[in-house]
Image (cartoon, rainbow, N blue to C red; front, side):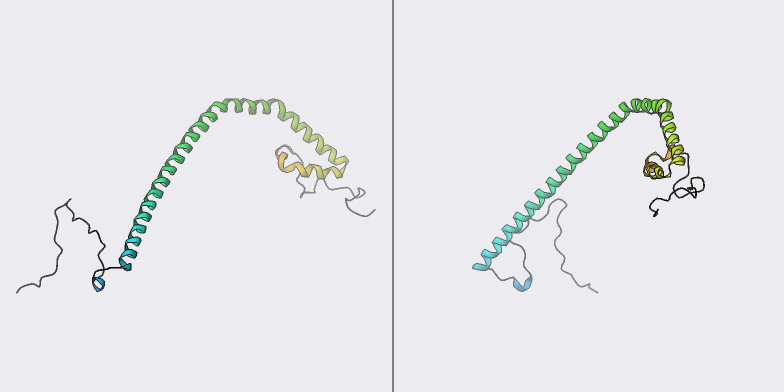
Length: 163
């Protein structure tokens, strides 16, 4: 029994590919020769296609070069920033230590005095509450929602109430 023969394209040796044809292969239904205005139009389309391929290749190359340049710039900036952090680390640590030793007790005493003043003048509670988010770690008294110890006395005027 003979096996049916199939049309197999001729094989080429590795590295030896057949040269591309100068004209693109057309579907079999339109394999008749092109002439006249249609041929001119086809050549224009081929030229435009070639120009677009070149433009695309140049655009991709430029994008790659720009991304490499940006990565190099960011790498150098990160190395520079790491060097500055390492250099400034001891200076910052000294400043923090100095603050904790000399300035922090002064701030705590000021906040404590302000909290004591609130017991004399309840209107000042608004000022205390305004700065609580920024200086909360230094406050000793309850927050504004907790009125257990800072509740106004019955004879103290209520802010905003008619007299």
